[in-house]
Length: 170
Image (cartoon, rainbow, N blue to C red; front, top):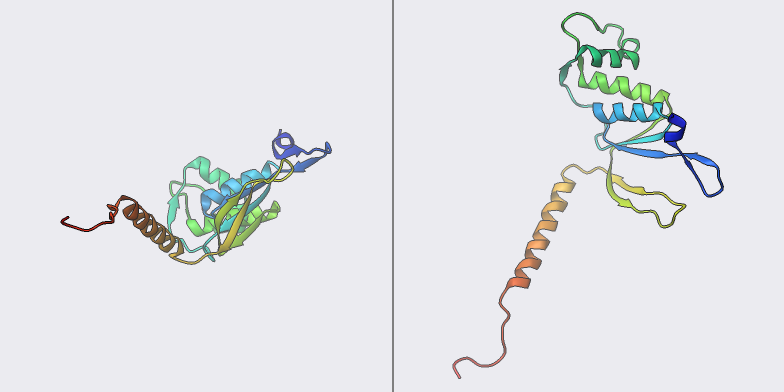
């Protein structure tokens, strides 16, 4: 079923692998990327941060720890204690585990970039694509503020009373 899911038939009756873009290399984004790679998709992950900087410690359910062990956590972290009532991993450890496994499946990761737009296909043979730019901290907030200011100025100019020509008091 993975071959059917990940492949598309092109006009010349050949099959090509679908490409998937995952936004964010947090635990959820990387876990999704691993799953998609296991299903046969060509996966690229885009992450705005230049490194794994989260310091949270998470307690795992038995099933979640089993999943991490199946994806190589014990191999990557030999001191990991996956049994007992305290099954914990740091967010950074989770990300490193999932990243290593994802890269072993042929995935690609781009750090320090953000998506700034989507480009629709121009014909039936082309695909959706994304535009990227280097990540600039607080850039989106500044862009949103500037856009809101322009919208407010446009709205106020459209609703302002129009001055009529002529003389007053006649």
